[in-house]
Image (cartoon, rainbow, N blue to C red; front, side, top):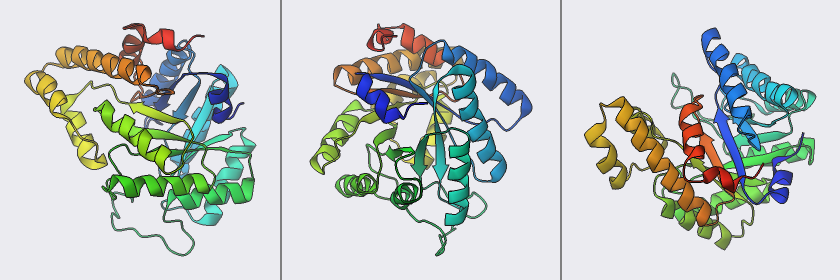
Length: 296
């Protein structure tokens, strides 16, 4: 399988999706159907999120392995340093290498819900930049390393210029490209790219797109991750918040316009947070000639 950074060298624009490991057997069966459908869209890669604990980790790697071996789709496995010791991380990465997984999204991760005050000890990493360095130290250039970016600043670092400097440290430690958190004001993304270029980050900065399909759910999620629900979004969705069909239709229209503007403004591709659902993404890509940006 290719490293994703090699795909960037071959293609002007990339199309990619994020999945998460379901907690139930029924959910997993549904995910297999979703993967089958997503594969028909010929994505350049698909990422899979990572849950704390060995069982969830194995599911992440199982899904990435399935993507690569059955569908010939490059997989990107999320990996968090929270709760894992350095030795555990080395074992996890060795397992990934054994499975043929060659792309890692290096994340700090959130403290566990039942222990929100968790702090790293001497055998843990505090920052994802440390994880980047660790991967390179122990596995040289085997893994391609993606890192998370925050166009509005990290929730723990609202100073956007300081946040850009912290992200540059990840590249100093071996990161290859950036995938951003969701956002709804494209100017935040374009300004973010400028800030990163100013501090010396030359890599691809992929915008993360979350189609709005449930407005109340969106409000709850953004409250925890720090993304801003813009006034434009509020004006569109608050009057129709209880009408599922209207929200879905408006969400698709909003995402189409957002994607068109991002691509026209020079974004190197689109990375969709699918929530394991294909229908919204499929409709977005089929409208507004967005598919034309990704010749297959």
